[in-house]
Image (cartoon, rainbow, N blue to C red):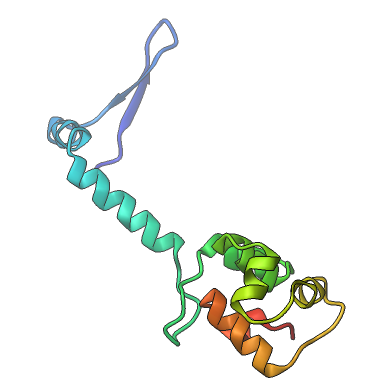
Amino acid sequence: MNKPVTITTPGGEELVLVPRTEYEALIARAGDDDAEDEGLSRLAEAEHAVMATDGTRGIPAGIAMEIAGGANALRVIREWVGLTQADLAERAETDQGTISNLEAGRRGTSAAVWRRIGKALDAPLDLLMPG
């Protein structure tokens, strides 16, 4: 696409001039649902950047940035997946107090519990576990 030229009318309205072929292409795409869907799919793919190569769930970029900013990964991913602490505890065959303590950084747990938590969230352990 060529760089558009802008002009301002005496009344202050800004107009954009584009070549007719580019204008017609824009008009044709404006009603093209397939082209719009393709554009949205590209945006979604960019947003869902995969953080792991081990077959676990891809983590959206916004979630990854929150974790990189210092948020507790376990809490952020649990909330993103849509589970309560009690739901996660049940799926990971542990208790809600353990999940609460892990999210608050008050204490650790065994490798076996971490593996069950990772499986329940479909998330990589190296992302979930602190340090």
